[in-house]
Amino acid sequence: MPTMPLLRSFQSRLLFFFVGLYILAQVLAFLAVDSASTQTARVHINDELTLGGKVFDQVIQSRSEQLLLASEALTGDLGFKSAFGSRDRPTLLSAMKNHAARINADVMLLISLDRTLIANTLHPKARLKPFPYPRLIKAAEQAGRASAIAFFEGRLYRFVVVPLRAPLPVAWVIVGFSIDDAMAQDLKRLTSLDVTFFVEAGGGRPPILAASTLAGDLHQELGAVLRSAALVTHGTTEFTMQEETFLGLSRDLSREGDSHVTVILQRSLDAALQPFYQLRRTLVLLFGGGLAALLSGGIVIATMVTKPVRMLAESAHSIEQGDYSRVVPVDRQDEFGRLSNAFNLMQEAIPQREVPIRYQA
Amino acid sequence: MLSFHIKQRDVLFIILAVVLLFSGSACTKTVHALVQDENGNPVQNAVVFAAATQSGDQAQPSVTGTVTEKRDSIELRNQKIIPSVLPVQIGTSVSFLNRDAIQYRIYSISPAKQFELMIEKGGSSSCVVFDKPGVVVMGSANNDHMIGYIYALKTPWFARTGTDGKAALRDLPQGTYDVRVWHPAMKCPPEATTKRVAPSSQGDANVKFAIPLQAAQNPERAAAGEK
Image 1 (tube, rainbow over the protein chains, first blue to last red):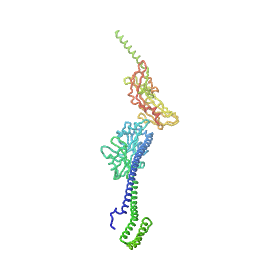
Image 2 (image 1 turned 90 degrees about the vertical axis):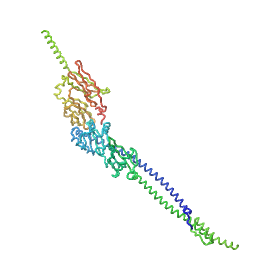
Image 3 (image 1 turned 30 degrees about the vertical axis):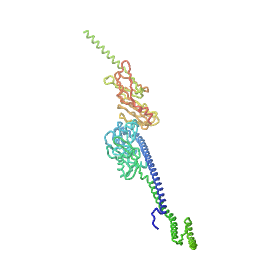
């Protein structure tokens, strides 16, 4: 039998059609599912990020509120007031250190009503100087209390400002709680987001990383991302770090003088998309398996059609040569079986009719 | 000779007149003060005080006033310091009388006087002597809303205004005085309120003040509003 071009054979045309149809349908379905699921995931992550941002704000606010109440209770202590009234620096500093320790504060500052830094537990011997955050004191003057996140002497603190009343306000007490990696981790547990605090000191210097939940090698890159101004304030932005895609949110925490404190909340898009990548892999596997089954099934079925046709063709060819002995095997009851049976009967009948024809001739 | 005698008589007459004039000045005078805020409302619990001007040496505080020990007292009643403003002359000893059924711990960390007193139920404290001029702000350790002021003055001539904003400085020897006002919520120093008065031999002097007050730091309102 001469080799036919691929599409000339019925078997290959049949296979080509069905396999093609299958691939087309699968690819279209895959694309639809993939784009819908990725988009859903993105919307979901975006929502998570927005929600995480709200939780972050809420946590910062309620913690500040708690610390304000604790600090107010602390400065209401008569012993503390007496220490202030003594006008003796060592006495005052000792009371400040003692009271700061009562609420696990890391620093306590005393600011006079004219906004001069009178005493600082970090530097007991420091001389009087203007307090570097006049806006914070101004806010306290207006509201009776204030809180802010501030960069002070090389570290980031949450400051709460409460008046020292005797019983009229005689000074401002600032209680500071340092913001470190442990606190960032606490925030991560609540928001499910990576939290990084940056301080920009101005003057084009690189931002200072104050606290973060990210691994050390990611810090530098995030700093670069921050500088590239890719993060739009109060919106979500996508950025890439070490070939991993992140969705990030930035918050201005405080801006006083040159220093500007920003927090970046971020979530790895790749990590969040992991379940969808899994779905994609499953879809590809299903597609491959289906294709293999279609091919093998298609070949078997096509062979079942083409084999009896080929045998009938061969038998007919023998008859053409005058050989009536080639019987087509009949091993099935379907349409092909009945056709083979009819063909064999026809083959038997031909020689019987041929004798009278020869005799008459 | 004759004319000389006449002159001598004239001189005697003048001396007599001067003596009479001086004896007339020994009559004491009263200064009536009215203290109002900038809107013309009477200001209660303002301290009006008078000091003799430098030139009038005849109107110095009487010596007896500083020698005899002056006493005054403050009541603690219904969780209030009464009066909330007490003017005293320096050297005055003040005791606290507790009319409530709770103990009080009254303190002050003001530069003019620092003290801390435990006052038993229904009892009274030992005396506190106010020996430096200035404002002493008092509070209660366990009652944050309680607030009281003692204003220690050098002069013996002072009075506190009533609800009508009026106060009278009595028993002032004749002379020229600088009258000033102090109030806990006043936005300016007392020196800025100075008014010079010289009660005439015919009658007493009237003086009216309009002082700028900080709205929120009115002591009564502070006591009521801060819990």
